[in-house]
Image 1 (cartoon, rainbow, N blue to C red):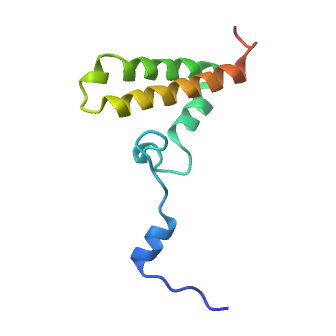
Image 2 (image 1 turned 45 degrees about the vertical axis):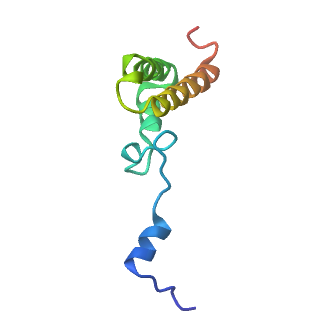
Length: 96
């Protein structure tokens, strides 16, 4: 069986990760583990709830109208709220 020969550009495109500014930001996915997963691993699920809550406040606060992209920032707030709810469901009965 002969190996597939690709140009460098074809190889790069074939193995490039799909990124999205809200769901999968490139700057949070540079390694093998996404940043939020690392944060949850380090802080623990319960403590990461408060990290997510802080980000909801950040994205819905005064920056919402002052950073040139309020729709994207509102979507980011929604993403962190969904993650917060996921973590709350996972830890229900632990500390509250």
